[in-house]
Image (cartoon, rainbow, N blue to C red; front, side, top):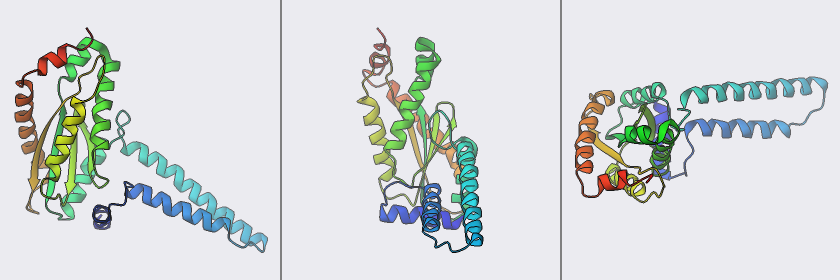
Length: 232
């Protein structure tokens, strides 16, 4: 677990472009397969060993794909809640600080569902999820923690990093052009500064900050007009 965090932080420092630990192991298995393809075979026993090893790697690939499927939320492509909670526990046990704890709630999902149905309200969730993922750095940990709620962790967050991330999400939502949907998201940010703090408990504080942001957004001039002007 600590190795995972160190790897993730190395990605942050090196800015290696977005592969996660799972993809890194895939890369290593691919290299093993390539090396076995060039292995000098001089006997039937050599052939048997190579075949057995290749079958082992292929079986590992199938198991990995099943495990990966159970980790991910099928609608959004981010971590499912159960696996996201495991990642939270890893962050806590690794005693990494500071950690930005972010809660992102889709505004007026119910409005989209009531007016346009399940298909469009699901599309709204996917649109926001895509923005949340695309604006994130590779080392961010992102999960769907409720129907219209996402959680994000930024290990060893730099000053202003989480706030800049939230700003980019809001800007992307506001610039999204669509005949029916008016994506927007309320975002709450708090920080873990003490290793004794629990990320899980800090999400309650992030939720409070998110509700404060939601209230301010809904009271802002033009919010209702943008929302209710869709689909007319």
